[in-house]
Image 1: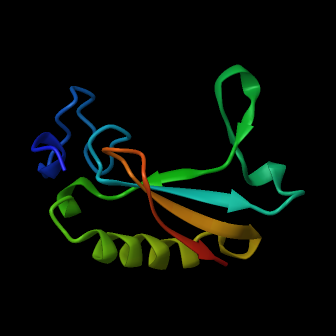
Image 2: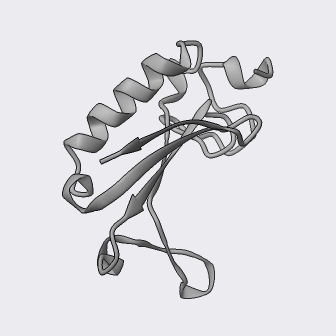
Length: 103
């Protein structure tokens, strides 16, 4: 983990307060079941993409398993819970898959 990503604050200059696509340690991709395009997020050019969440910046120093558990718990309480096939967690520093949970 890079030193800057271990910070409790956004260090990339975007001044994000809670999560940051650049500074958060983990990225969670919610893979939705077919036919749920209404739940997808509009990306560039109007393309629909699966929702992506990032861990809270103040939790960056926690063990990745603690982050996965906390993020998955929030996912289970979200509107996406009944419409997903799988949830993938990636390291936001090196892009490697940390774990994948079939829903």
